[in-house]
Image (tube, rainbow, N blue to C red; front, side):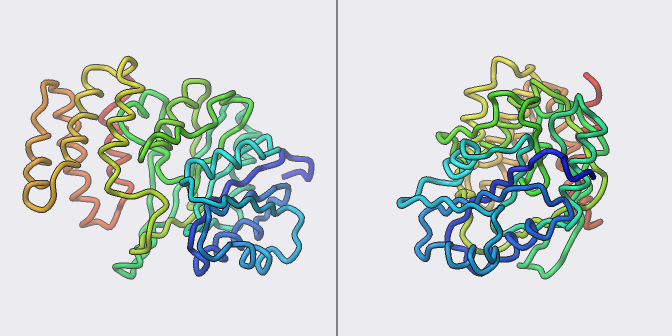
Length: 305
């Protein structure tokens, strides 16, 4: 990759994770692609992140630290970084995730070879600390924007990057969303550009019991907010699929399991078929230790439309 490649602005929100943040920071600064700026946004951590950033950054001029004096949330933190970012390419990482050293080099090279592509994702490791195991999330080799109407294919922020000029003014997160705000952003961005996939493992997502930047219990509200914004653009089948997922989020324990079963019966045969594909792939994926099987199966089942 030539030294005069595009400047990459790396967005890293953090809150109260001083034990995890160093690994995320180090993985960005160790990139083989050097033309980057790292925008760390401290969302009012009880112990400010400045000391950790200074220790890891060691005076690296590519690192900038912003701090909120009161908690604003992960979306507000990322939006603040977007406004400050000077890069032609925006990359994302959470404070509990890590990148492989060649991550940016591979994805920036992909953008250079595909000038009409504005979003690039990749495969990634999933480290589940609760089970002490590392699995590989291998997503589909390719997908198109219509697939995003059904589910959040880019998934974790750990491997997504966006060419700023290609997504125009859609690079922002709706701070009113309690979850699914990343899905909403990817859908809006994908209306303006195509999506590419680097079929290499370029990052690591960590699953753990620590507090999350977004409360997992808010997923239902996020799905409802997504419907509120995008329902006019959804097909009857994809809307039924989305509402089935809302039903799946209701209740706990046995009641939740019953809601999952009830959700499979929708007023759209296509949605019901895809829900069965999804649930089957999820169970098979667990047995095969293949978390990306659900994504691959759904992309195949949805087809070209």
